Image 1 (cartoon, helix red, strand yellow):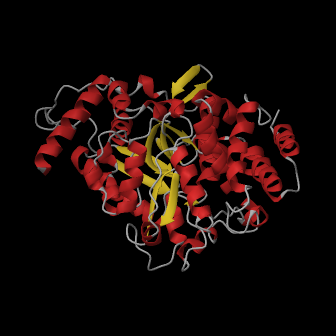
Image 2 (cartoon, helix red, strand yellow):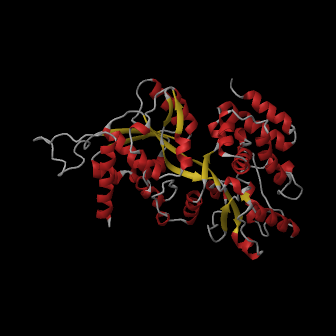
Image 3 (cartoon, one colour):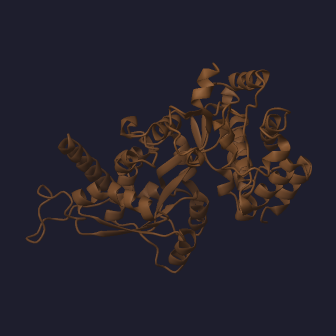
Length: 441
């Protein structure tokens, strides 16, 4: 089986290389003929990569590309840094950019695209193969404005999903509750829990200097569910104001849950002072003090140590609010961009656009693939597998909005003003006007 996969991958890469303009040189006495070694033109070449993967993540990434290196003879030299966001700017601006860089925030990549540093993948890769392996939303998010117009600035690698609602499975099942699949069903579940004398949601947005980010995630979820993708994108780039009917509706939908008496454990007054990591702990008390918690899959690290996925806890997709907007998923992830256009770099980028490039990492745990050709059977734990299934079934995906906005807004006024609104120290009108005023001119 491995030999068959090896041959198929070889054919794919050779075809991609030929499409992208790579030419096989005439064989010489020092160079094997193409029939003997299809990778003769790139064997021994070095491709440099930079990114944020360090420690265990770096090891898993290097293992995931090992079979490709062995097959092609290309040496991918990856350098990870915990200070990647700062160091990559120095390298690029200083004329020493890596061949490929992995950006955990597409907003940072967008800055370099605007300055003309990034290679347009439309001109370098077999984009028919790339486009066939991602849903349109991933392609939309990788299209960015350069000095010469829109370009395909990158391809997506490891991703994760945020549109998840967690619950205490044992107690949930024992109570006879059913997982909701629509907003109407979720509303009915909330009402049923309250009728039983309990509290539906546990919510906390305290996070030190980053207090408020958990609120912004909820608003981003509702922007995807109550308005169009075009409006979401305009909101993220500052074209659609915070003080607009569309954004107000999204925030009000969150407030209708958070501020209603009996809906959140501790009430509205406790949300801004409860740590985001402590908030879900009340689900595991006996009996549970609250039943539902919306958060990304990282939140399981704050669950009780002995709690087992699928047994003690489980999760479901945060339901769509309006069928007209499909089943959107809020995501985060890594996007690979190309800075030097050579045959071996093209070949690596073409490979990174396939599920095979992340298969080993998926099997090791801690990675979700956005590629259509990836298999759910690769996932070895139920949480990763179920998140992957939710992302695969999404009709649209969008990146965390606050991560795409200018820092003064996304990690500044948006967090701060929404915290003030939740705590009641500012009205919604005051908060929205303050955020709009903070947007860089």
